[in-house]
Amino acid sequence: MADTMSDNSLKDFYIPNYILVPGSEVKDVSHVPACPVIVFINSKSGGQLGGDLLVTYRAVLNENQVFDLGEKAPDKVLHQLYVTLGTLKFSGDILATEIEKRLRIIVAGGDGTASWLLGVVCDLKLPQPPPIATVPLGTGNNLPFSFGWGKKNPGTDRQSVEFFLNQVKIAKEMKIDSWHIIMRMRAPKEGSCDPIAPLELPHSLHAFHRVSQTDTLNKEGYHTFRGGFWNYFSIGMDAQVSYAFHSERKLHPEKFKNQLVNQSTYLKLGCTQGWFCASLFHPSSRNIAHLTKVRIMKRQGQWEDLKIPRSIRSIVCLNLPSFSGGLNPWGTPHRKKSHDRDLTPPYVDDGLIEIVGFRDAWHGLVLLSPNGHGTRLAQANRIRFEFHKGAADHTFMRIDGEPWKQPLPVDDDAVVVEISHLGQVSMLATPNCRSKSVHDPSSPVGHLDEEEDSAEESMEDWEERRKFGAADTFKFPDEFDIAHLS
Image 1 (spheres, rainbow, N blue to C red):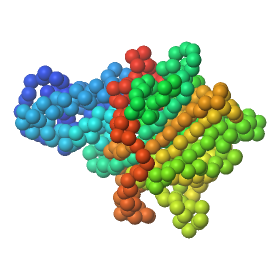
Image 2 (cartoon, rainbow, N blue to C red):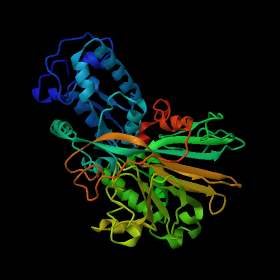
Image 3 (cartoon, rainbow, N blue to C red):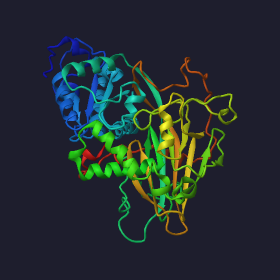
Image 4 (cartoon, one colour):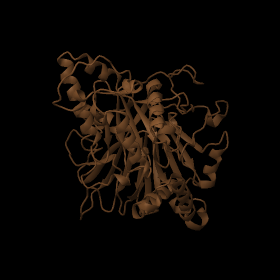
């Protein structure tokens, strides 16, 4: 579409070329868009739907404001855009000032794709970070569902796209917590270590090798991986089933072009992996309590041991009220029951993460009932898993839909995974939003006072933890096939 829009109903979303393309001639523009958007689409998501959606958005908007994530990395796109906006603002361009103030981002893809965009926006430390709306194009679609955008694949025709754009225009901004994750393991004596073969880490975990006297997060002789997530981190059987699904999809991508077929395949793998039949397929030695010691830190800033029931085979550390395609494992604690007395509803901006356990998939089915929930273990500002030599040589982990097979210690050393609250990012939410804010007066529990984290932490450590690293952590290698991303 040219700079001059023929359809007045879409002018509120349109950004002219001189702002999008460096070196373009500056033009006088009389209309200031109410909701300028930048659109990122994973064209490999949703089978053919991603590609179809890309074509429609480029026909409806300026094609230079719609990007295929398989061709252009979002960190480079946004960095260039904000450099141009800053230059134009300095020269007195009013439109550039208004676009920076009103800009919104649309990302179409699965949970992995949406998490990638959130990480990039968080990393770039933009002067006015734009809020993000998510188009569901994956299998689980937990992020879109949490904020009212649905979980079914969208229509790709012009009418559907225009409807979605108008929903973005009226959507409200909502802050959500972001979480830092650090994983440390001893470097192997032989072989490559980045990543440790055959370890295939999600894109949001990146290896850091720098070791200095002031950086206590890195240790000599160890490999440290850092990253972030917004929805969940899980360990155990649910991650194992997810890993089997992703492995099968990599081997036979032609079989995974339909959302219903994908969900059916996922259920079948849950059966074959032993998620329903623990006694036959899953020895008790693989239960979470046998694999790892778990410690948590609440707002007071002191670590304490978390007791895990011996039957628990999967733990989910959950930030949003949507898991496995829209289920809410935490539910709503009953304040009059002694077990739930110190627990709150799952607010997405309270600096706490919900820790839930599951025995098996049958236990998970209780989530389908109106008040069903998993085993509520704790809410915490930090959580640490310490894996020692013993029960197994590996386990399975998952971050926001991306699973991996994690080797466990073979000697007297430990693998440590620590999750801590980092900050917040802005999402866009529709009136059907399922997420709750602790600052929302309509929430069943009032405002929680902000408390300082009293844990001792050097400024150097904080600087390291603060940097997810858009240029590194969320950057795909050149040979990466985006089709592997959910």
